[in-house]
Image (cartoon, rainbow, N blue to C red; front, side, top):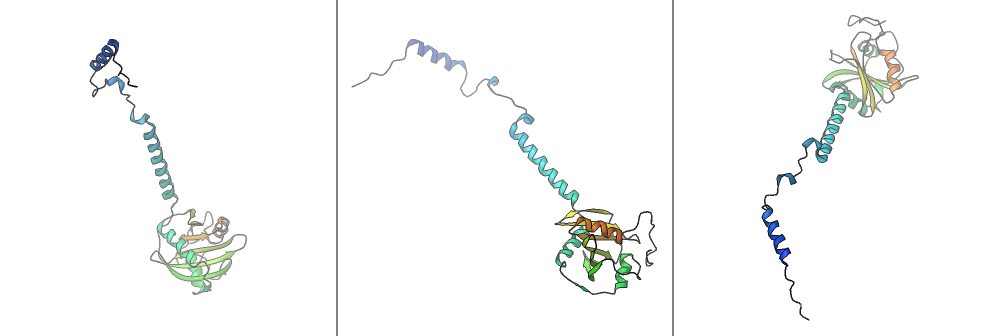
Length: 202
């Protein structure tokens, strides 16, 4: 069966002609465009929020990051955590810790030895202190620029305190309470002035 093609009516022809003359298809009217401010676009807002969140996270990490000397001390403690022995005179270690050379080493000493921390000659003491736990204390042979501070880094707690002679000590422990107890043993009591270097503390 053959079908004859449908013929456009006069109305269809007139409507098509009017629409063709309404505007150039390549140049639609400006009012058809939706002008959305950049800050109102959801994609831009999501990207900006992600950027701010990433910047905040990076800033928080660097804010909590300890000084290079402390970071190196933490790494050193990690690799010597299981080392035991006495490799230096007790009186020499006590002097560098700012303690009286006549007193015993606080706690139950596990390791006493000279070492290198970030290129600095240091004195390493690992000791177990009752009601606190294991703590490692680093004293330095030469003055170092460290201010009293503390934090958590690389799965350990760390703290910088002033010895009884007013020189910085770096302490590292896996338990935060161990640092508090060690501070009482090695730190300068409140109100005490620094002793002259080379003299024993009280």
